[in-house]
Image (tube, each protein chain N blue to C red):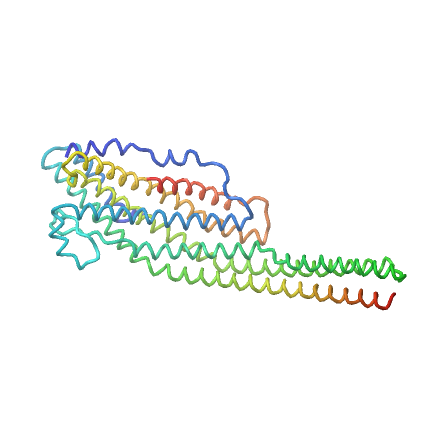
Length: 108
Length: 313
């Protein structure tokens, strides 16, 4: 994959900084100013690239949100099913206790 | 110029990443597969937030420096209506304007927060003990059935082994039906969810990694531009200058730590779709070790250390 424009500009800035450090006078100052330009344009290029790639995120976010909602629904459904089964057990429990009472009353 | 370069030079030798990653071994994230996935995803989302905040603070430091420069005052008035802060002129004579990156970063943060929410709900679905309520009810039922047996026996009603077996079987059957039904439905729901989102997760990882490259460049551009201008912006009196030098060093260090943070994040982004896919595959074909998930958790641990370092700057 080729390097992005912002990366290339930063690499160029590094080279220019080295030239500025190793030279003197006007050459050094010029190289340094150019390296600062490269850094500035690198930030601009990066922002521009970010702006361009933004629409893709919306679709992904929608898909993940939908999945989260589906998971919440499934969670709710399973909780409801478990609650219903527990209610059946509770009903059986009540019936058993009723039988106990009847057995007691009849003196069996 | 020579003085400016000398101030820069010793800092360039810092091997920040190696020093940071050296002590990061062992497993901090425990629990089930889904909990580990959820926790690591939360670390990834939080790290994204921390590193973006770091980038934003670099921009703020840079703009503060720019505004403090005497040459910026007039330019500031000229471009006040725009979104950025002027910062001197380019060699071509154009006013440099650093646009606020916040809106660009926010759009990506929202996506990461959604990912963290998805992982959290997935974990709830995978780990909730739905049968807990059923267990409590069947336990009560078992006790009642035992009492009934005792009452019948006391009343002289013969309780044959067949009756005993039937009463104990009732609660067992209720519990079994509940557990197998709930677990079967849970597996089905998890499978469907993991399968449906796999592509989105893979796409998100690709997008985030590509954009992290740009955001990392932006952070490097901000910090190096700031450091490059430090000599020019340095206050003249000794005391203020000393504090200013410490500030410059802080900005430089933050820039370097952020580069490391983005690299660590990239590693997690590489592993994210693989770990997610492994959860899906494990439903079809359960296996003992989850290598990709373990690697994802390991990468999260490294990121946690980096996050702490960034916060401490």
